[in-house]
Amino acid sequence: MNPRETVANDLLRSAARLSRWASRLAAFDVSYAQARLLALLDELGPARVSALAEADHCSQPTMSTALQRLESQGWAGRVPDPADARASLLSLTPAGRDTLEEIRRARAAVLSPTLASLDESEVAQLRAAVAALDDLLLRAARTDTHH
Amino acid sequence: MNPRETVANDLLRSAARLSRWASRLAAFDVSYAQARLLALLDELGPARVSALAEADHCSQPTMSTALQRLESQGWAGRVPDPADARASLLSLTPAGRDTLEEIRRARAAVLSPTLASLDESEVAQLRAAVAALDDLLLRAARTDTHH
DNA sequence: CAGTTTACATAGTTCACCTATATAAACCAA
DNA sequence: TTGGTTTATATAGGTGAACTATGTAAACTG
Image 1: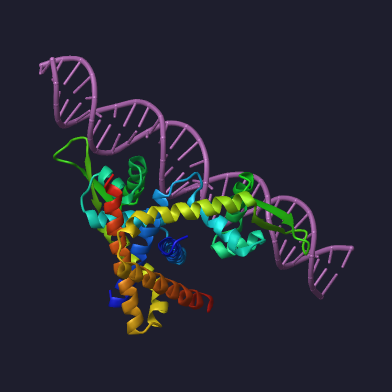
Image 2: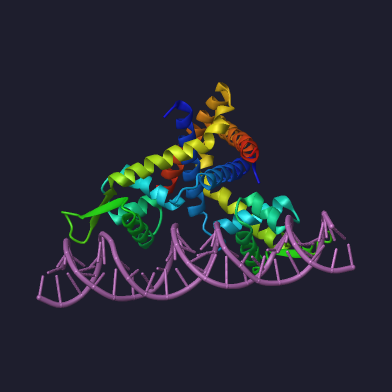
């Protein structure tokens, strides 16, 4: 395995561990996938089922049932798409928005005792790490859609 | 939200996206959880069910059935623990090790077109990001086990 | 206007997780 | 040494998240 492959592996391993660790500790009554979907709805505003599925990289049926779960909790609602009677437009309800905010606070809180023990230069390193990850994701997305 | 909370949120979001993106593209016949378990077995060598569950941050029954699936594929095997007849020691079989290597290659390959477009300083930034994440995880684990 | 495509829902399956509980070995106290 | 507790694992039973295949109805299109 060449050096770049090693970096790739290490990066994926560490990112996965961090992600897994945080979602395990931040335990509410809302699952990881549902939290992701709340954030997606918040970001994409009123959107169709298929648009949400594509953005979340999951199949359309998966998104359909996930949205039904959110709707049954009162966190999302739909209106018929005025432009196309086959489609619906999904958005967060106020309750859904509140839940999303709560989740964000809880996720940040999981890391906060650890972050509190860091000095400024270490926080700066983390910020740089975030920037590096985001840059990689941006490039990866471009490579991905190129074919 | 204070600056450190923002870093926390950004970091978790980016790590989750990267992880999800990589596992979506690297599609083999082995699931994400099983791949994680193969890596864990490789790392911890012959280990007990409960030790593996703790290391993976999942419940013992979850680990039991996950191991049974791996065993039924011929990727893991167990011997009775000579020190305790209640316990077993699990390890990778040669086939399991081969599969793990294959998975690692495939995961790295997902990132490789993107990595190829980076210059040396950008790769160095990624290495630094990995180090920052690992450091954070180490500290987080300490904070976690303190009570 | 008939046929195709599109948007979504439903059916049916598998896996990954959980809690609760059963089983059997090990340990420990009287 | 035996009876009770703890420990290591397995099993039962349930939910959520993912998939493919397919059904239904609206919208296009020749």
